Amino acid sequence: MSIGSAKLLGMEQLNYDICYHALKTRDHRFDGRFYTAVLTTGIFCRPVCPAVTPKRANVEFYPSAEAAIAHGFRPCLRCRPEAAPGSPASTGVQATVVRAVRLIEQGALQEGSIADLAGRLGVGDRHLRRIFKAHTGVTPQEHAKARRLLRARQLIVDSNLTMTEIADIAGFASLRRFNDAMKQAYGQAPTAFRRGIAQNTLKIPHTGDPFAPRNDDLILRLRARQPFDAEYLLAFFRARAIPGLETVRDRIYARGFRIGDGVGMMICHFSPDQSGVNVILRGPARAAVLEIGARVRRLFDLDADVPSITAQFSDDALLAPLITKRPGLRVPGCWDQFELAIRAVLGQQVSVAAARTLAGRLVQGYGDALPDDLTDGTGVTHLCAQPERLVGLDLIGIGLTRRRAQTVSDVIDMFADPRCDQKSDDALIAAMTAIKGIGPWTLNYFALRGLGDPDAFPAADLGILKASALGGGPDKAKALETLSESWRPWRAYAAQYLWSALEGE
Image (cartoon, rainbow, N blue to C red; front, side, top):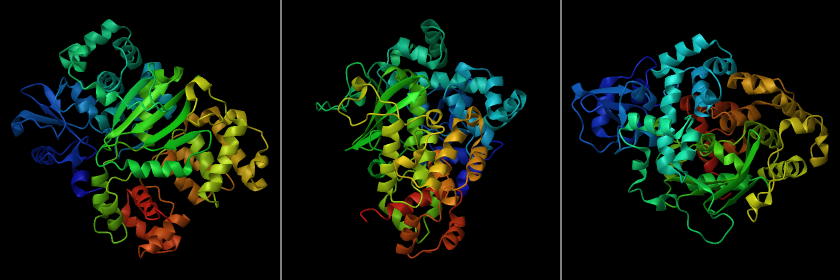
């Protein structure tokens, strides 16, 4: 992280002088890192807002949109703060707050209480309130309330849902309460936000193929922080697509999914202008649109502030040429942690193609088949098998050695344990470390993609070592690990850039 960003995002409070300087320059690298509240108008904006810069004495700064709303400010209709790339105020703070923000984003406080949320995090509810307020400036309830408003407005503008559907999905008890809350927060009725919007931003050219939207499909528009290299992401997923589970075509990624008891199908169309992703959702599980949107953002790393991250590598002889070639590279995430853990173990000491074959056999043999009316013609046929279904099965038949099959079985047992969902990221890594047959490469790969750890670095990966040697760097894991110390805390991005050096080989 650059020195400026480190000072700007101090844990206790924002540095107002640095914020105001960034505001005057409208540097896009600060977009989403702070919000400017104008005392004379009662409105808050992104630092890239084209409005006239207010006087220093007339502004206050907040680390999140939720904090600004909680202090009585309304979102700007011009720069749309809710569309700013996500930058939870918990960035860089302790893991408990990071996970709390993530769970609230997924609707934890819609379905349960603060005590329930604290229980999932393994802390007391009083302690959770204290640390959450200290690091985000608002209480968990205030954050959740503001988040509902922000998400509701985003769904109004960036989806084709009806107002009744949006009110229900956003967690409002009735359409009337939804309308009242939106008027109080934004100063106008929800329907006003759809007037004058170019609806073609939600349309995908219909070519007669099975990946085109149907009349009853939900379409969700997800913007990406720029620059965004969609081409590389699709190439990455194409090489690793599990037969039957995923399909990758030109600017398209498709898969089935399960959320709770519901199943669905999603077809992600990457915009030709690299601005983001249009997500087509069909099936009963589409009602979980907020969680789906959050997962897709992590899957494609849409919120990464790549320029600020790569600024640390700008003088690095090994990485700088790769950044110049692909300035918008992202770290691919995962849809489901169990699925990624199995992928990682199956990928140990074999080629990417061999790992795909093994995973495909597991999906076809034990995954639930998807309804034809959701997936017909897409090549997607099954869901990933749930860990509970795989417990106790002999997996040697899919082509594994007895030792590898035992490692996979141990991973299955770990995720099948109901307590696994309550484990912190550190506890999850510790549990996997204890499994025989899982070493540093698997742990780092899982942390990098499964946990979204920006500092995970599989130094022993053969591809990374090969890329390092091609660029004049170390070809031994220990030496590369030492070199990578200068890339902290963004080594996951360094790893991705090194992998990108092997394109076409």
